[in-house]
Amino acid sequence: MYAWGYDELKPVSKGHEENWFGLGLTAIDALDTSIMMRLPGITAKIRNLCTTLKYDHDGLSNVFELTIRVLGSFLTGYNLTNDGFYLEKAVEIGDILMLSFDKTPTPLPATSINFAFMKAVPDH
Image 1 (cartoon, one colour):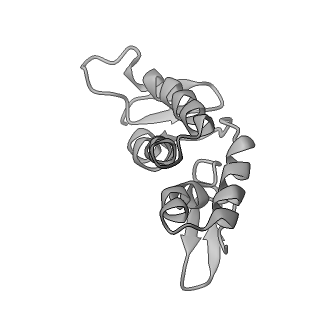
Image 2 (cartoon, rainbow, N blue to C red):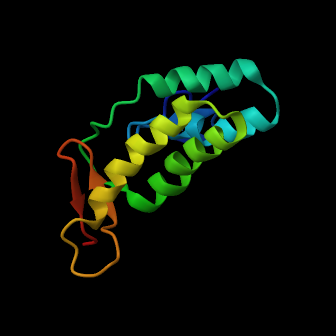
């Protein structure tokens, strides 16, 4: 719980890195594990954290990381529990991730999204 509500755990120091995306990726990443390990208390805490998600970070949020860590966790959470809440969260982040395909010169997505402006940011 050293990185609760933050995006990155620092296991040696038992601390956390300041918010990378401002989403609490560490907890969202642990969602499927908590479900599979039958840890309902932790799963409920993660679900509760997900009710407060705000996609408003003014910085570069990596599309790949968002896809595998956030979208993947919500889809897996839905698959394991059939809880429509996780499907709603998957659709919510999925719609945002679709921005990465807007106005790109190739079929490949932009590498980042700025939540504050809801705009894709191509690789520099």
